[in-house]
Image (tube, rainbow over all chains, first blue to last red; front, side):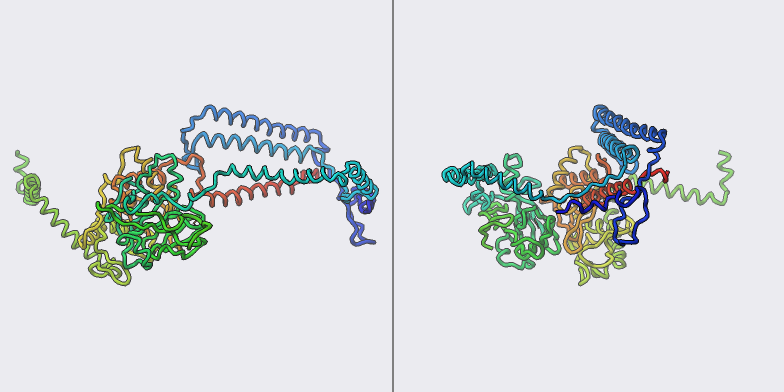
Length: 356
Length: 269
Ligand code: FES
C-alpha cells in the first residue's frame, strides 16, 4: 500500500542529475538511477537539426511519389506483360511494379518516422512511477456502500418477481445464439452414409467411367501396375453438384496380380485383380492417390497415412483410423466394369456409427 | 581435253577412276533397288539386336540375367518393351547404382545409338510398349496445354506436385521433379510406369492425352513465366512459410534491433 516505495529511488534523490558514478558505498544494492542525459547532435546543432528535418521530409516525399507510381503503374501497365528481371526471372511487369512501389511507399514512411523519432523528437528520459493497482480503503468502502444503497433502493432482494423474470430472460438470451447455428445448414441426414454408387443394383448395375476419357472401361483396359480414376455412370462434370458428388464417389482403380492380394475378402470384391478403392482418405478426407505400384502402398499427402492396397487397404502408417472402403465390382454382359451396389461402409473421414 | 589426257599417267588416276565407279554404282543401286529396302531394314534390325545383346551382356546381364530373364537382383525384361529401355537407360537410371525401389536418375553413359540397340534387343524378348515417335509427344495445338493441365491435375499432380516439382512418397522414396525432363522421356514414363510410378496405358489414357500432358508439363516447368517472381521451388506453403518466418521476420527483428541499438548521441557523431 505504500506510495512512497519508489520515492527515494527517483534520480533526484541520488544527488545531482548527470552524475553517473554509482553510490555503492553504503548500500551495494542501491538503485543507480538514470544515466546522465546525453544531448544528440541535432539537439545542440541547429543546422544538423534542419538537415535531419529535410531528410525526414524527403523520405515522406519519396513515399508520396511511390504511391503515385503505384497508381500510375496500375493504370498504365498491361497485366499480361512479362519482363525479365535478373534474379527473379520472367515476371509480370505489373506485379513487379506494384510490389516495388508499394514497398517503397511503406518503407519510406517507416524509415522517415524512425529517423524523425531518433533525431528530432525529444529524447529526454522520463521515469514513470508504477502505482499499486487497488484503490485505497476509503474509496473501496465508499463503492461498497454505494452498491448496498443501490441494491436496497432497487428492491431487488425484495421484489422476487422482478428478480426471477430477470434471471429467466438472461438465461434465455443465449438461445438466440444457438438458433443462429442453424444457419450452418440442414442436418446431413444420411447423406454421409451413401455415395452415388447407391443407385447401382444387381439388376441395373452402374458402369465405372474413366475420368480421363469419360468412357466405360473393359477389364483388359486396366493393366497390372496401372492407376486409373473412375466415377459412376451418369455423373457429369457439368452437373451443378459435381464437386459434392465426386467428393464421395471418386474411385481409384488398381490391378494387382491376384496371387499378390493378401486379403481374400478384398480379392473377391475385385474383378480378376482389379480393385476399386475409395479415393477419399479415412483420416480427414483428403484425396489420396500417391500409389506406388511396386509396394502397392497408397500414401495420403495430408498426414502421411499409408494404406496397403494389396491387403484390403489396411492402414500401415499414419493417423487414419480404418482401411479405405472398397467397392465391389464385376463386369456386365458387354464386358464393361460395373458396380452392383454402394460401398459397404461410409467413405471418408471418421463417422459416428462406423462398424469397423 | 588435253589437260585430262596429260594426267592419265598420274599415279593416283586409277584410284580416282575406281572411286568414281564405286560412287556411280552405289548411287545407281540406291536409285533402282528400293525393293530391297525392307530387307535391309530387317538386316539392320537384326544387327541392332546382336549389338544390343552384346551391350546387354556387359551392362545389364549381372542383374537381369544373360537373356533378360531376370534374377534375384533384377526383374525379368520380357515384355517391358523398347520404351522402358529408352527411358531407363536414357535418363541414366539404368544401369542402377544399387538395386531398390528408388533408382535415381544420373548421368547417362550410353549414346542414343547404343540405347536403341539395347532397346531393340529387349524388345526382341517379348512385345511391349515401343519408343514413341516425335509426333506422338510433340503437340502443335495450343489447346493441348489447358487440356493437359486438367489431366495432369487428375493423374499426376498428387505425386509430382501441381507445378511438376516432384514430391515425397513413403519410406524415403520420392517422385522426381519434371523440370527439364525430355518430352520423350515423360511420354515413356507414362507408358511404362518406371519403378513405383503406376503406368497409364493407352487403354485408360489414350495417346492424345499423353501428348497433352507432355505439352503441359514442358510448358509449366520450362517455359511458363512466373508472374510473381521468386517461386521458392513452387513447393507451396511449406517453403513460403519458412521463407516468411526466417527471412521476413528475421529481417524485421534485425532492423528493430539495429534501430534500438543505435542512438544518435552527440558524442558518437
Ligand atoms: S487426411 Fe489423409 S492422412 Fe490426414
